[in-house]
Structure formats: C-alpha cells, structure tokens
Image (cartoon, rainbow, N blue to C red; front, side, top):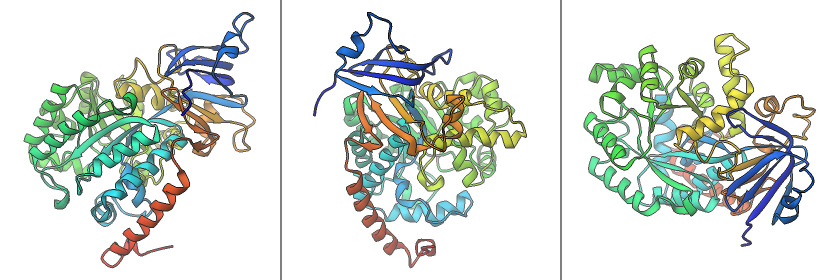
Length: 464
C-alpha cells in the first residue's frame, strides 16, 4: 500500500463547520498524514503555491462540496441482514416478529458480513464515524466479528457493548458478571485498534430490559474507565409507563438516579421526555442522539429537538439500525431531520440547513467527546473528510451549498471519503474492501437465513 503523507483538496466549496460556519467557495484543505494543516480560499496567493507542488496526492474538488465527515450517532450494524423483512409493525411487535427471530438465527459469520456491509454503506453515504450499539451475543465471536469489519472497512467509531440482564427476549439475556467481564475484555483487546480508530463504549440496551443493580454497576463501570454510556431512553410512551410502574420514576429520572447521567452519556431517541427531564439533560450536559427516520418508520413519536437545542442540550444525529430505517443514508437523515420538525411544529423556519449540518458534524463530535479533533475542517483536526459531487441534475444549479446538501444530496452523490487522511472511498467505490464479493456472500447467507425462519415466522416467507 502506498503511504500518502500530504494531500491537497482544492477548487471545491469548503464548508468548514467551524464555530463561524465559514465557507470557502472555492477553497482548499491541506493535509499532512492524518491531520488538517490548513484551510482557506483558492487559488492560493502567489508564493504559497508550494502546497500544490509538494503534495503527494492532489484532489481537484471542482463542482463538489467538501465537508467534515458526518457522525452516525446510533446504529445496529447487524440489522443490514434484517432490513425490509416486514415494514408495518409497532416497535414491540417488530422486535418479536423480525429482529429477535432473525438475530437468533444468524450465525457468527453473518455478523461479520452484516457489519461490513453496514460500514460500507455508512462510508459511502458520508459517515466517517459510527456508534454501533451491538447487543446480540449468541456466539462469542459476534462482537469481535463486528469490530473486525469496522477495522477492515477503514471507518472510525465506537462499539457500545450492549446487554440486558432482566426482561426482553429470554435468549438474549446475559448474566450480569458475564456482561462486565466481556466488556472489560473488549477494552483490553480492541480499544485503540485500527490505528486508533476503534473505541469501546458501555451500552446497556434499554431501561425496561435492565435491573436497577445492573444499571448502577454499568454507571460505575463507565465512570471508573471514563467510557461513553450509550442507552435507548424514552423511545415509546410504553417505556415511560414501565419505569413509572417499577420505580416510580420517568425514564431519565431513573438514568440520573442510578448515577448514569453525565457529559459522557448518550441518550438515544429521547422522544417522550418531559420538561423536567430536559432540564436534567441540560444540567448534566448529556447528549441526545436523534434518529428521525427510525422514529417515523416505527411511529414512535417526535423528539423535542428544537426545544432541546434552545435549552443548550447537545443533539447529534443517527440513522438507527437498518432494520428500522431501512438504510443508513447519512445525507438522507439531514433532510428528514429538517422536514420532520417543520411539519410537526407547522413552522417552516425550524432547523435551517446549517443547524442540521451542525448536528450531523459538530454535534456528533461533541457527543463522542471528540470536539477537539473532529466535527469541523480546521487546522489540528483529524482528516476525516467527505467530498460530494454536486454536479447532478437533482442538485444543480446551486444557490446555497448548505441547502443543497441538506435537501438535494443523498448517499449516491458521495465521491471521495478520507478517514485519518487515508482515502477509503474514491469515485464512489470503497478502496479497502471488495464490495461485490461481500454483497454476493451476504445475499447467499440471507437466503439461507430466510429458509431457516420462513416456516415459523411468515414475515420471512413474503417476497413481494
């Protein structure tokens, strides 16, 4: 493999997403190894042409937008094998008819291929960073196979080691000690792998599947190791009723009571939070991961995102798993975010494009504790960069690049992606893995999966 030490991206429209949301049109980004060294207007002033002459690799981004890599704050990569099985169920029924039987029938190799397809999909739709909430531990190799796929694809991200000890599907429960022993083992083996791209987070799956002692232990485990805690909270109104009946507390009140709420906490969904819970989020500086497509798909409700942002709460964006989206198009999520809240509030001024882009970049970086080195194109930050072809009939002609990115572009328009300064997508093709071969293998495995399930679960036998 040729090691590129310097890269110049020039002649494109650079949306820096810095604190002032500066845009250079045209502009350039100059990279040394894995770090951005300079950004600015193009062409360079006379005497500064050294950047063009000396760069090992030059990318002419004429007609393209250059943005920081989007951060997908919540997904379940294994669900690429389960997307579109059946589309018309509420959350509880969807879990029972689609996700639980499908995941229980998957074999260890399936988790590797599913995750690899999921990583490819994320990279090719503009996400350089993912938070994968992995909670299927039917084979001991499952989690390591997901992490192996993340490393091989070239993506950056966390794996939140999920688990439940109480209710939920009985075959997916684990003993409390096992969960913490295996999370500790993952930290020893995988933290910092992939040239520093891979991290491990604590991921108790949800509140209704976990006992209070387990949640308290998870909170202490995360604090002692300075880990992110990533947990589904208040996704449906039924989940509020569950914690009220068990503990006399609403969802986020319980998260606070067990010692889990803080700046390293990621509240996934947070749809049914009341005013007091929003105050708790602001007080403890926790982040919310907003998944608008999934929330609409499952008819879970609408999170109070404009109010959260007004209260100073950090909001990041996620696709959620491919089982409830059904894809992981990170550019598509931008449009859904804006449109959902406009129609919900009957207010077309809600969430203008730059605010949506902020959530997808800086908001995600803050949620991951990476504000200092990710989320914007600025000197000293990691070279995680996405270049999007804007010369398409569904995008051009362009008045405002921020608007065109949010409302026009989709994952198919991503041209080039760099992670850590390495080109992992070029001309719309992944450079580190063989997409066609992976898809071929995955389809064969999914066909086998359907055969195993179709007699007992009719949703797996329907082809139209």
